[in-house]
Structures are given as C-alpha cells and as structure tokens.
Length: 601
Ligand SMILES: Nc1ncnc2c1ncn2[C@@H]1O[C@H](COP(=O)(O)OP(=O)(O)OP(=O)(O)O)[C@@H](O)[C@H]1O
Image (cartoon, rainbow, N blue to C red; front, side):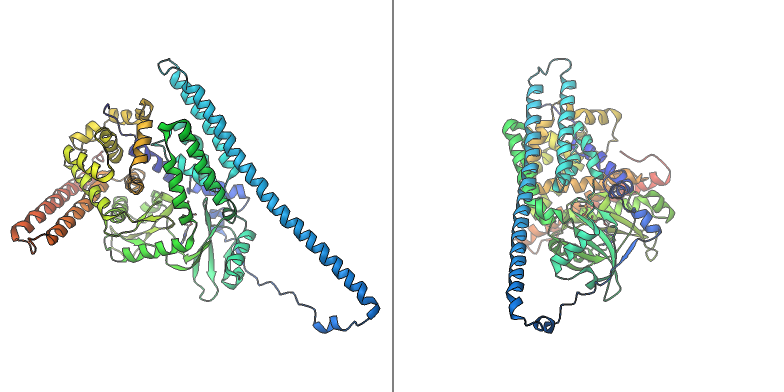
C-alpha cells in the first residue's frame, strides 16, 4: 500500500471548526430555527423575556348528583334512556372510527416514510452503478463521479428532511463524517445542522402531563414558552421551580420521537445493509449499529441524569480541570430538570477578551478535561463533545489566568473505555511522540488489531499528519505541501480503505478520536498564541501518567514487590523524563508566545 496522507483528523478538525463557527448550535443556527418556527429568537428573548406564566386552569364542576335524581318521570325515562343509549352508541362508534383512523393514519405515514427511503436508495444505487461502470482511466471520470455524489446527496437530503425526526440527527451525523464521506455529501447535508425542530409549547405541556400525570403548573411558577436551545432530539426551556423559586433548565424531548424512532432506526439499518449488499467495499453498517445502540440511550433522560451526576462526582476530585456540570434536580424518561448554568461558546472570542480570559488557558483546560476523560481510570467519556455542548463562564473568584469555568451540557451519550484500551492508546501516543515506528505498529495492533498494511493510514488518521511526517516525529511544522496532500487524500482512492479501517476499529476508539480531535480543533478556533502543540503536550502528559500507573501496578503484582529501589527508580525515571521533556517544551512554547512568534504547527 502506498504511503497515504492523513485524511481523518485534519478534515475532522476543519469540520469541528465549522461546527463551532457556523451551523449547528451557533447563533445563526438558533436564529434560523426560531425564524422558521415563527417565534422570537433566544436573543430577542434575552432582550425582553418572553415568559409564559403558568396559570392553573379552573376545574370544570360536575353536576350535583341531586340534580340528576330530581327528575323521576316514568314515561319520559325510556325516552331519556334511549337518547342516552343513542348518544353512547354514537360516541362509541365515533371513538372506534377515530381509533381505527388513528391507526390507519399511523400506518399510512409509516408506509410513506418507508417508501421514501426505499425509493431514494434504489435511485441512488442505480445512479452509482451506472457512473462506476465508466472507465476510471477516462479523463472525465472524476467529474462524473463528483456529479453523481452530488445528485445522490441531494436526493437523500430531500428524504431526510421530509422524514424528519431521527433522520435529521442521522444527516447531521453524516455531514460531520467529512473524513469519510465525499465532500459533496457532507456539504449538501450542512443545511441539516440548522434544522432544529421546535416543538410547540402546547405539545410540551401535553408531554409533561402525560409523563408525570401533573400539569406544568404543578412544578413551575414560570416556564418560558420559547426554548433557549433546540436540537434534533430535544429542546431546553428556562423555568422557575414552584416550591423553591430556583431558576432551572428543563430539557424536553420532541414528542414526535416516540412515535417514529423504532421505525426510523429499522429503516436506517435497512438502508446501510442494502448499500453493503450492492457495494461491499463501502460497508458502513457499523454506523447504523452505533445508532441502534446509542439512540435509545440518548432518548432516556433518566440515563442522561445518571451520566451527568457520575461525571460531576468524578470531576469534583480533579482539581486541574475547572469543570461545571449542572446538577440534575429530577428526571423522567423524556423530561430533565437541571440547575440553570449559563456561559458563552468557547469560540466567542469577544467575550473571552472582554473578560480577560486567556484563550490559551481555555484551550489547555479543555485539553485537560477531555484527556482526563480519555485516560483517567474509570473516567466517564462524554461522547458528543461539540462546541454547542461546551460553554465558558468568567469566574472572578479564581485567580488569573484561571479566571473561568468550563460548563459541559448534554450527557446523553457516555462510554467508559476499558483500561486496556486506555493503556494501549497511551502507549501508542508516546511511541508517536518518540518517533518510535516499531512501537507505534505494535500498539496499533494491540489497540485495534491494525495490520501492517493499514498501519500508515491509521497513524495518519490519529495524528492528523502525513505518514512520512509521523515517521520523523510530529513536532515538525505542517508545510503547505503536507496540507495539500492531506486535502487530496480521499480523492486518491483512500476512501474504501478508510471505510474498512474505521469499520474494523473498536467503536469506543472512534469516540476517543472524536474527542481528541475536538480539543485540537478548539485551538484553531481559539487562535491561541501557542498553537495546537500545547494540547498535544497535555495529551502526552496524560499518556505518560497512564503508562506510569500501569508500570506501578505491574510492579505491585510481581514477585519483586515491594520493589527494590532500583526497579522503582527505573519506572519513575521514565515517567519523569517525559514530564521534564514536556515541561521544557511547554516553557519554550510559552516563551515563543510571549515573544509574539508564530504558533507551532
Ligand atoms: N442546565 C442548563 N443551563 C443552561 N442552559 C442549558 C442547560 N442545559 C442545556 N442548556 C442549553 O440548551 C442547549 C441544548 O442542550 P443540550 O445540548 O443538552 O440538548 P440536546 O438536544 O442534547 O442537543 P445536541 O444533541 O445537539 O447536543 C445547550 O447548548 C445549552 O445552550
């Protein structure tokens, strides 16, 4: 296999930066969402709170029993009875018709949704078969292929938009896989990032009544009818708890999800299975499997509440990471009531500068938080770490340069990588840092069963660098030439290899890579003085700690425990060596930053 460029992380980096700076949960996106819904925006709302006071509806009064009893006219009784019987019969028939028609409506819509998916799939498969029948050597082959990608993506977009519900989530997910899918697909799906369905206030009231047996007014004295945030699965409203007067954020699931999620998941699996049948080299069934596992978890807010509280507990003991996770007050499957904690997006540079918050420190804090999640023993790993789920808040009680808190939202999807994966991943990174190719190959095998054939692609994927650079040591700045090679990589027939590779690595590793990528991409959007190398060094620090802990554990299990001074010093020396190297490098970077020299890499 020729030495490939590294398409994964750089493209991910770009993608995440796009997410941070534009669509999904960005200002523009919220505006777009609320405009579409014909409601005031979050920002208009901030200017003059559109608060819905919750009134208790007066209970309808039943007729006193005596009124009914007070008409004993035997002759008319049979007439009255027959009228009642007639009414009851009519009511039963109407109810029956309504029930049947409700089922019929559901079945009709289900058929429509399925037919849309099947038709789009059939037309697209045919389109690709015809296009791929052309000779790859012909001059316009790439142009034809790109046009085919575009047509198929546009057809798919229409279907995703029409079906809505979790198809929007699927589309958003696909559009972020730009290290994997052709650019035409990802770009066509970008508008889905702005498609935040907003459920009506009435439907939210109905859901609360249905799921709790009590009206909203029993829980909250105030409930803002316009959500402060809306996403594909849920929306968040500000409210005030009736009993305590506490300001809270209430996350409510979109009511329509309950009706369609099972069918939509089945259709998603069907679509990826069919693609695999026709194009076995593009086996992306792992994506559907991932959705089958993760979506039911994300749709259970009891689980989200548990995740949030577990992460909060874990980070209460991690002093180096100033992380705030809103306390959960109560939860039901589709309702989550939390402490209201607000801040600004991490890429809101104007806010950071106005509050004298050091961008490099924000970037470093994020790197510490997410590396703690990746490497900490039993640490919970947040699996959806995009810019909309993170906020920065000025904290005047903490001394500069740590005068801020990081707030983390959305705890719907967590994993806990097992210790073996964390350790192999740590060793792999240390081998990368030391330019130790033999070690890299070994740990890639341990970590994900990566064969020698796929190793160059894998190494590029995790480092975001061209393999030729990885071999030399990745502290070499990224040249323009390297950037170009990376950008063109997918067009050079790497796609099928990458699909195969990503399909074969443990899922949790993909989530780790995504998290790892986020911290580096935040550096780009934060325009730090020291460049992404600082986050990279923080990663190395955590990796070396993980390896050291393993060495200590092995020593404890060996017959040489308690260790002789010699064996103990051996392990300690390796650990300290890495730490010192890193400390030296960090100081050098800080000096460069202070001298106003260009960021590294
Ligand atoms: N406790 C809270 N206090 C204040 N604001 C909150 C709180 N929880 C959520 N929000 C706001 O609501 C937005 C959406 O919340 P959240 O990310 O949990 O929803 P979601 O439906 O899971 O979104 P997505 O799946 O796109 O990440 C957040 O970006 C944040 O701005």
